[in-house]
Length: 175
Image (cartoon, rainbow, N blue to C red; front, side, top):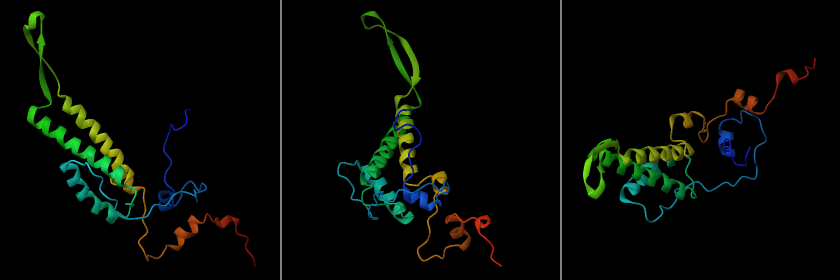
């Protein structure tokens, strides 16, 4: 299998939040970017800027935003703006468009119907948006796989016991 194919590895922080169900060794040398709000890159469209201002507070509330996430977040916002633009065009023209059929000497022979190219653009933008939303834990299924401990919350003793990998059968009873 070529290198880089298959599932992408999960960040160590996500593995810890999930309780490291595979019990594999965690990467203790993984970079840990500073939590916080990244600076919005220049050059975003007005629609992309509006989405940035809409989603950053939500990501900050979830506690998944770091100072180096700006470019990934900008790419999501750009895909969102592209999606909105394509959807506007679909509403304006429709899903099906007419294409003229020209003959010799520029004689119009008729029309054929085809899918509006904006539909393909919209679908591509939605797929890209979804991939970024999953990365930021912003879809229902991606959120269900992440557990965030609230600061100051007491750990459940059973969770701590299970996370430590202790097995009661390994304990020797001393009488």
